[in-house]
Every structure is written in C-alpha cells, then in structure tokens.
Length: 175
Image (cartoon, rainbow, N blue to C red; front, side, top):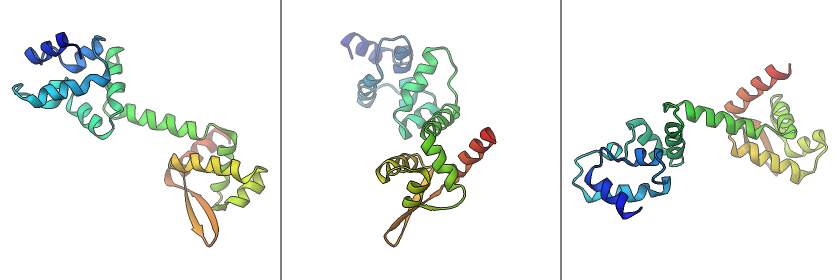
C-alpha cells in the first residue's frame, strides 16, 4: 500500500475503509493485509470488520472462504447490493453445472442414477478407455457429485445426494 493511503487509513479509518478504497479502485484485494496490520497496531477502537468496511456477514464469509472477498467487493463496485448467501449458491450451481457440462460426464451420472457401477462397466457401456473414464470420474468426484468405494480389487462409483439432485434436473430437461 502506498504511504499516502496508509496514512489516510490510520488517521480516518471510518471514512477510508479498505472496502471503500477497493470500490474506488485505490487498493487491490491483496492489500487487505496492510489494513489488518494497521488494525492490529491498535488505537482504532473498532472491530476488524468495521475497520475494513465489511458487514458482519461479509467478514464471516471472508474468514470461511477468502476468495469470497473480491466477489463481494466487486458486487459493490458494480452497484449490485451484496447478497448474504445467494452469491455462494450461484457459484456452487455454476461449479456443479461445469462438472456436468460434458456429454460423457452427463452420461455417467445418468448411468449411476440406475445404481452403482464398476469403472470397467462404465468404460464398456460408454466405449471409452479406462484413463478417459477415470478422468471424468475424478472431476465428478471432486465436484461432490459421485463417491467411490472399493469392493475387493474393484472401484465402484455411486451418486451423492447432490448427484441425485443433478440427475433430477437433467432428467427434467431431457425428458
């Protein structure tokens, strides 16, 4: 952070919060550490979330998910009111849809809707190699859509509750 902005933050924290300076384009999200350091020095008489110019909800979200800070502040910058949990739900939905935006992955979740499947069975039914299917399964697993379990030497996959919900949405779209 530039010394000029740091001095402003130290002398008038309520007026020049991190959030306000970010929205004005005078600081970047990476500079929040400088503000936190200033707050730790003391003398502000404010809670950290007030000092940063964040609501309690934004601060709590940021602590849980540091990447959420930029999203919340960008919403302010572009004139959209910050929403409590809606942005998180929208991001999660977008991430889930990315995971099933591939034809093979869609076929896999629809096949798993019929019951658990062995990797070799998926390869056979889809006519694809084991490495290709394993790649798709890994993406679905990391997305929380499927879960593996081992039975003997074989790896089986089944849908999670989230995966079952996605199957319902897909089936409602394709009939």
